[in-house]
Structure formats: structure tokens, C-alpha cells
Length: 275
Image (cartoon, rainbow, N blue to C red; front, top):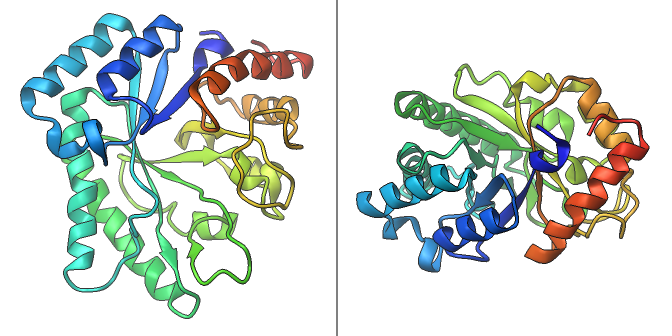
């Protein structure tokens, strides 16, 4: 498969799922990523009949689907009742995944408030292990994403934004557990993309997520070329590790993500990456 065909688009909440499939097919996009939290895409609006129609449309149009949970839901929640709600939320994504024929579900490690970091990490890891065990039964796949850093003085900090924090979860013992590598998030921390790529076993990486930003800067999700992330070097490093999976554009508007696919291919070609 060509590199262009491997670059998908994060639809997020921008379109109803059925419309997103038609949009992707029209523009020859092979992979879309979507959230099932709100409005027409709220997970509670999908009965078996709607799921069957979506799955048939995906197969007919040749589009692959991934699901993406909301990072605002704190997977590291430890409060009574609230934690049960978080787990029910994640399990609902697992339950619907095979009905829609989704390739995977992107999840997050949650967030902490400083003094409770260790407790949050432990609670989140235990929850993810349980969700992965449930995913095994449903033949679903869970991808844990490395998230973005927040300003140092922010009260709330995302977990798994550094390589060390992300690695804390890597030994979850489940064949349903894999990784989603967001390159631009790695560009924000001292380890950089190079440090993350060196540490990653790309046979465990289901997708690589893309946007531009500035080295050691703040979370921005810029259009490629508007920051200083060297996409050619990034493609070369990742492809040299044997990755042949999906890249997912996640920034700006749909048209921006669509146009940027061609820019990214040219950056890879200029870096002598097979496209």
C-alpha cells in the first residue's frame, strides 16, 4: 500500500459517522478515526441495526474505521462510583467495536493533580488491564496513546506524556493491548521523536498520529509545515523500524488534513523514504 493510502484522517466529532464514511470514500481516504461521545455519534444512538448499516458501508466503500475515546474522561479515576462510570464508558467502546468492524480503540492514561500521581497511575493501569481483558473476549484491540505535556505550572497534568510514564503501562499482559504513537506529542518533550522511536517496538504500534508543533513547545496541532517538526526525518526513523501501518492526521479542518496528506508524502520522498 502506498504511503498516501496509509495516511488517514481523524474525523473526531466533525461529521456523523455515516457521512464520514461517504466523505472518506469520495476523497479516497482509506482510514478514519472517530469519537462516539456526542450528538449524532453518541454511542447510545447506535443500535444493532445502525451498527450493521455502518459496517456494511465501511466494507462497501473500502474504508477502515478506528474509534477514539475522549481524553477528558479520566481513566486514572479512583473515586468510588466515578471510577465505575469511567470503566463502563471504556467497556461501551469495546462492546461496540466489533459491531462496527473497528480496527482498534484509542484510549488514554488519564491525568493527575500533582500529589496523587502515583495513585492515579496505579488506578489507571489496573483499569486498562481490566478493559483489555474485556477486549480480548470481544476480539477488540486497545491502543494506548502518549499524550501531550501541559504547562509546568498547570494543576492538571496528562499521564503518559513522557516516555518513562508511557512505558509504565507497556507491560499490561494482554494480546489486545497495543500502542498509538503521537509523534507531535513526543516533539514537545526532551526525549523527542528520536527517543520515543528508539524505545518503541513498532510491531506493537497500531498507528502513528500526526500534527505539527514546535520543539519543546506547547500543544498546538498545527498543519504540517507550520511548526518545526521534521516530517521527512520522522518518516525515515519510523519506517526504518519496520512500521508499515496507519498514519493519522489530527489537526485543523478536514480539508487541511486532506491536503496535508500530499505534503507529507513529499516530505517522506525528499527524505528517501519509499512512498
